[in-house]
Image (tube, rainbow, N blue to C red; front, side, top):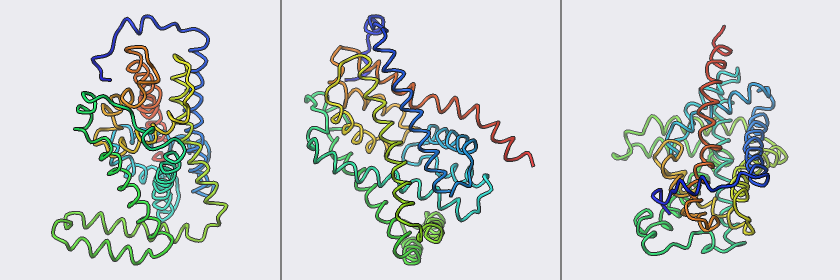
Length: 320
């Protein structure tokens, strides 16, 4: 399913009745819930040092940065700067941003095998005909997914080991690795990552299990709300029974999008959506329309809200 399938007649034929509007509103509520629990997580990790109002501003600017930078990079650098302006000590700032990233990765590496066991791995991937398969990432959908998953898994284990087991060892290994000729140009970043891991270890290594359960719980609800939002959009136009399969396919989609080099996964996201979920919107042209609504609700609002919040935040943090 590609963009040439878009048909203006399909858009004009959609009946925006009570059912459609109900599920579109439900999808918006899911996005609000997602952001709310991202704010909850930020307050948990900061030990409530960041107020609700300031948490909202931080999260909107964080999402704004993520929307305008490649998915593979994300808004981490900007996030460090934003959180640092909330008058939290620099060590805790680094630890919060690093742990936020770690919790997201833990969600993916734990939920993917669970969903594979529940619905089956083959079901989690779209059943593509030969012509579509050839056009989708050069016949390499499985290779792209498992490459992305392996990167996430390796990164998560590396950071987890560094924070909770041997932070000094990881710092030394990162430094020594940059003496390899082809890694030399990343020496400064590697050294900084080692420092960040050691700092995060000092801040969070002694936290009780209850703290981590709350932080992961907020992460789980935020990401699940994001995925259920798509289920709601599909329900607006077509009666959906396979909710868990749609949820599982979104996990696979996001692993692919996380290693996408375009800002916010732009372009690739609009292509991947109808490829993975088009069969649950059988009316021709409808997958493209729903993909557009999906991006309209989950991507573009953060660019607009971020542009509004940015000057307000700048005045607040730099007024003194």
